[in-house]
Amino acid sequence: MEIKKIDHFDGEYAFLSNFYICNVTYNGINYKHTEGAFQAQKSLNEQDRRVIASLSPSQAKRAAGRRGFVKLRPDWEDIKDQIMDEVLIAKFTQNPSLKEQLLDTGDVELIEGNTWHDNYWGNCTCSKCSGIIGRNQLGKTLMNIREEIRKNG
Ligand SMILES: [Zn+2]
Image (cartoon, rainbow, N blue to C red; front, top):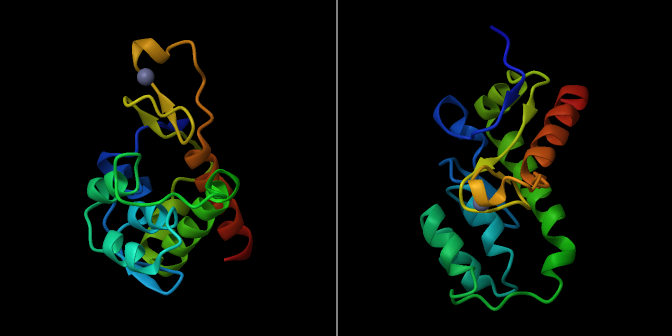
């Protein structure tokens, strides 16, 4: 059976999630998941970034959130899409087996389906969000990288 879309980044597609555990080096710091690599860029302070690199994915998200210890860099909203792109390029070029798995998804649409009302990076499937079509910025970024890697290796 042919799949037309992947709309949950769990199970066999957990590797598409930023919570997936894999080594990724970004801006000179080693992270254990792309969630940490991404969240750490909210800070301009290198020590903060190193602390975030030592945390679990959910801890990293919390640390860089509104109630966390990170002072949000002023240009964050302008650069966050580009940071996500760079972090995910690092993930898939530094981990050849993940690159293969990404390419193996072929041309199917990748949608970061979630239940926590994130309609920016993904698409929330809860009843309250049923009238909203999520931007799916994470899924779009993954599809762009997949196409780029397929063309240029
Ligand atoms: Zn929702």
